[in-house]
Length: 441
Image 1: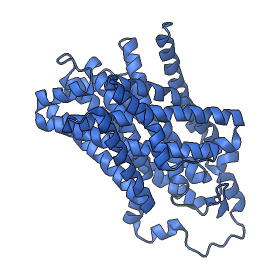
Image 2 (image 1 turned 30 degrees about the vertical axis):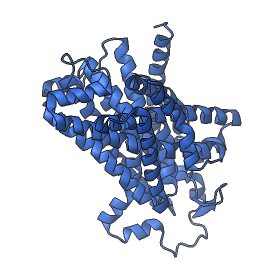
Image 3 (image 1 turned 90 degrees about the vertical axis):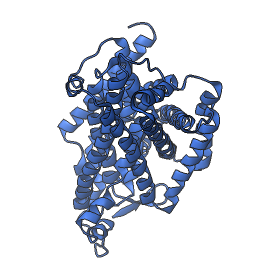
Image 4 (image 1 turned 60 degrees about the vertical axis):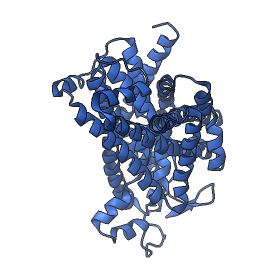
């Protein structure tokens, strides 16, 4: 059952419309896309339905995560490990709700905002989303450029250009089907995870110290700043928008039963992908805490790379640089994709991906060419991202709680309460950070 959207392409009915249509005159003789997947067998069906969450998960291990996690581990040991765990659990709920929007309504989150919110609000949300996209690009380009610099000695500016070129190649896979793009991104995510698991086992962390890091606590205002950066690097606003677009047209649901089945598979997808991303983030902090805290003064990505080489050998340094490169390449392409979704959804306008990539390259290339401290720029970019989270979360909670939009797939009260609590927590941390920046706190 479809209706034609404003862009002229067939779309699944949203939750409320689907309820009204069930039992109508639409022919059900043709097998649905989901039924065709079922015919392949349970294992092949499951594998085919996994993927969107892995694309979203790449944004949770982007180069900004390297900077914030390594800074947190080097400066505070295992103190902030609990922040990574908590942020990852938040990310699971947030990403599932985003995917749920696309499956249940056939719309992505920016499109729902455009259709249901006042025009000034829509324009504000679009502008702040574009600013967040710039901060995202800053982290991804600098991370990829740093990796190429560490691996091959390339200057940062040409290395950033190479990162852009590789991102173009990865994005071009979309023209040959979404599955190739998903597999490429998932493979790069795997490289990041394997690299840091190797580092973690080679460093031999203390089990008791890791357990102590799971107890919530802060040490000072700077630790709260780093926690906010970790949160901004983990609960990423641009992929809150993106995940709803990844699921909206991927496997169109024909009826309520198929929607429920797709949601069940999406929960599996989210848990697996976010768990892998969370494991990579935790490994980053654990390795930094084990090797650097109280032993080496590590204030930059380059110093961390050198520290791995000094303490664990050249293999560990190589694994770190390769993981950083995979992170920069994959997250850069995903960030561009998310920016396209944001513009098209909020404004019903789109730019060619090549042009958009060229426009968003300007700030990171300027930073690379001007000689700013790249590690500090990465940390600051994650704080900017954290400020954008509430403006994506609040509409997400609002729409997923409304039966008028979601029909029978509207959130249960407990789910809405949990999502609202996440939005309030993030907002409170941001207010503290703003007050500290202005010298009030």
